[in-house]
Image (cartoon, rainbow, N blue to C red; front, side, top):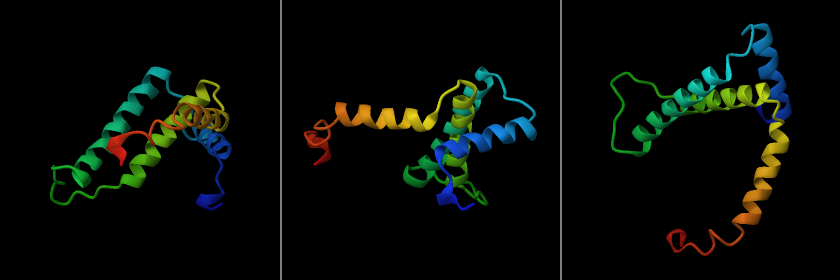
Length: 112
């Protein structure tokens, strides 16, 4: 399977299978929320150094792709344990944003 072949549904099944076989079981929702916050902080740290004023420590090898994948993983795990179909939720979210923001950004002078 190549990266472009993976659907959101397949990713949810892959995470579920990994957790139930290699990871033994899902962590509690509170633990997963803490992990989500931790991974978000790791992405923020890399972004602050790549695009902000901070610099990396000598020898540090940032991997934004890996940290974003960690965020995706924990988001999928939380969705799985909450019974959320992320494909359906994503489509509903795009629809919501499209309806709500159809002219909002076009009319924002800050984006001109």
